[in-house]
Structures are given as C-alpha cells and as structure tokens.
Length: 143
Image (tube, rainbow, N blue to C red; front, side, top):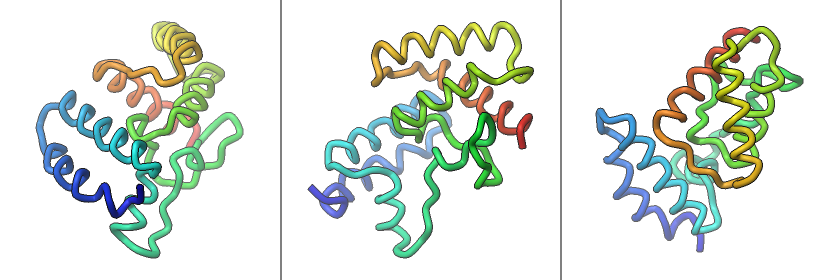
C-alpha cells in the first residue's frame, strides 16, 4: 500500500490533533503513526507528499549530544520518533552527565529497561510529557 492510499484515513485523523487534551493529541499521533506504518510508510513520506520537494529532516539526525550533531533549532519530538530513535534518545539521556537530576535518571533507567524488553513499548501520556521535557532539557544543555 502506498502513501496515497492512506491519505484519506490520515485526513480524518488530523482534525483530532486540534484538541486541548494532551492525551488525546498523543493518541491521535499514535493512530496516525500506526496507519502510516500499516501502509509501509512513515511521517517523512507523508510530509514529502504534502510538500513535494521539501527536505524533511529525520529526528534521529537532530541529536544534540553524545556524538549526535545538531541539525535543527528545536528539540525533536519523542512522540514522532521511530522505535530506533526512541531507543537512541533513551540511551543518550541515560549516558548524559550533569543534565538530569537523580529522579530523572532513575525514571530514564526504568523506561530504558522496559523499552529494551518490549521494543514497541507504548508510553503513557504522562511518561511522554516527562520524556519530552527531558529531551528539551538535554537539547538546551548541549546546544
């Protein structure tokens, strides 16, 4: 299945992103991601279809620390990352020195262990919110 065939499904989900509820918004992003994945495509191809010729940067390429070059002015979104990118970020946050406090390091350690065992772990809306804050914190500390 190609991206063109899933556009009508994605088009029905996009208006749901306008909610004021963070949990509903994250659930919608996940639903769009599942729809794209089931069609054998991803967010990058969707962006290319929406804006032909646009250069769409991978979130993985925008890593700001632990050996990753900064290629974007804003931190990447954990919600939009692939499983591989999420694992890289959890590992990078786990290895970062002087960025996270003790509670944050323990939180990342626990999530990293869960993620390594499940690989397709679905994080709760609260966990996503905490991780997004830590990614932004690390981004700013190493920018």
